[in-house]
Length: 126
Image (cartoon, rainbow, N blue to C red; front, side, top):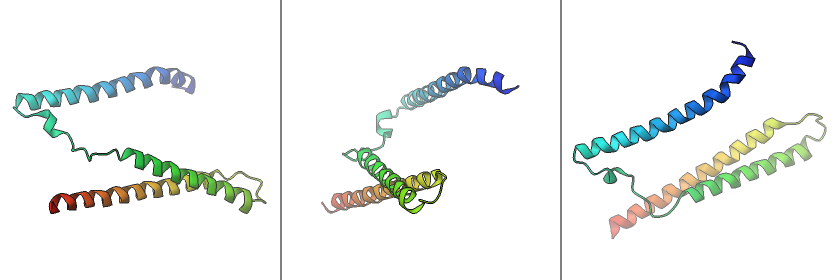
C-alpha cells in the first residue's frame, strides 16, 4: 500500500474508530449500571465523592501560568542569549514550556493534597 492509498483511508478510518471508541465507552458504562441494578446495588453510590469545589480551575490556571512563564523565558533566552545563532531553537521553547507546565501541575497537586489533608483533619476533629 503506497502513501496515496493510505492518505485516502485516513479520513475514513479516523471517524469510524472515534465513533467505535465512544460507542464502546457508553455501551460498557450502561451495561455496568444495569448489572449493578440487577444485583440490587445502587449505581449512584458508586460515584466518587465531590470535594465541594472545583479543582480543575486551579489545575488549569497553574498549568497555563507555568506554560506562559516557560514560553516567555524561552523567548528571552532565544532573543538575548542566543543572539549569534542563526538557527531557530525550537527545542528550548518545547522544553521550557514542558518544564514550567509540569511545575505548575506539581504545584497544583501539592496545593490540592494539602487542602484535602486539612479537610480530613477538620472532619476528624469536629
